[in-house]
Image (cartoon, rainbow, N blue to C red; front, side):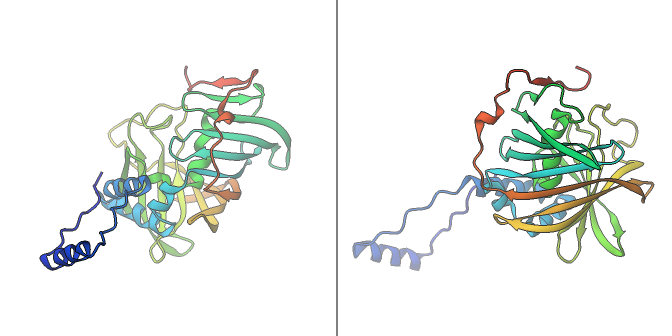
Length: 302
């Protein structure tokens, strides 16, 4: 983490300062550097250490910047997700502490893609356990979904977290336009799915994220073999659409997902919507208290 720069005044400036002090004035006190600035400086140093990280930093700057991100106490919005292959659709009201990543979801609707129905339930990640209420709530794995939608919505900002790796890939075409490409991976022990990857399509002119390709390794063994960083044979292409700026941060409100294999789109997979976005809501600690009758979701295999 870098410390704030201190300027050494030349002799002329020192003389002026002494003259002002002699006349009864005094230089203004030095203002403390905010925690958001310090975090932004540390993240900038991490990202600037690699060519891939520099591409991610460009994207973060285009979407609002690191200081605005670290100054945002929470992320709050509604997240609606539909997956035809799972025959599932649900909508939750999300509140996440951006510093600790503790999260609470109020379940608003739950059902099939064609018939989501009102539902009264909730789930949370309290930093130690993921729980869901009622215990027999179908479809939603609270440990998986507590932060999955959050990561999709908060790209590229969350890709400045410690413990990530960045690899520049050859430019790729998307809808007739060429994009800068960078693959982001997670270090061993980072989260429940360290084998996950996110590959960003970054607009060469605007530095905005047009979409990502991602893999999901939750509940599966970590990747192994001679080429652990090789491009996965099967991914999901997630297109980012309908951007809006809230509290200085620019995020997408619509996502279209497609199965992606051997470098090409295969078929439609999933869709998501985000609304009622805020980055300034206070975090309510009481929401993390597990109600009687809730169920704790363990890690797979435990």
